[in-house]
Length: 239
Image (cartoon, rainbow, N blue to C red):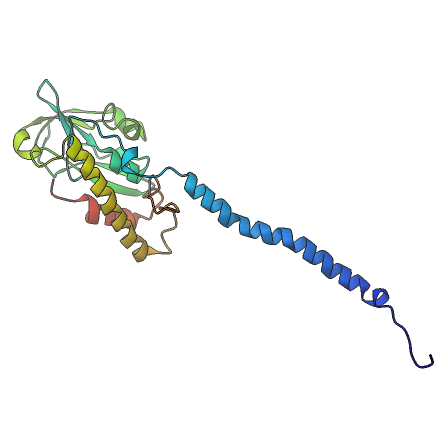
């Protein structure tokens, strides 16, 4: 067979083909790894506690104001005031600052403290008018103490009220309070929907689970601007 030369491709291209095959074999596991974070992320989100009405502590006998503080009349005639559990589930662990002093008089709606987290803060308004009798000084040095027991050891002040009946008649009590917290959760969802649209992609933390439920502590890690919007657009209401 003159003029015809037989060439064995495995002698000339075999090495190249083997390299390509080896490359494909190696890249498949990497491709799978690249797709794993999405699945892992979904699992992580689903494992985060959901912020639902059933997760909230809502003791009976307390008067809950629309600015998410509460008041409870003691037998001695002084009213304990503090932060409600929904506010603390929204913010996450916070530090208490800017306390008022015993002997000062405050009106309903006056700023009586601030809660802070990583440079962001919210102003807390008094639910009642009266004279401050006692300040819970333990909260000043214990970050997150108010989150652990907001209705017990986490109270902020004891105040001698001046207009107790008048000022608390519009507050929520017992079953009415439970229903109000449910509507507040829906209102907060609406607030966060607007916020995400306004600041995305600046707002990085995941705040919704796959089923659409809020994750616990949705404001935690959010920019200061979001906290400011929450103060003005959600928290600041007529008591």
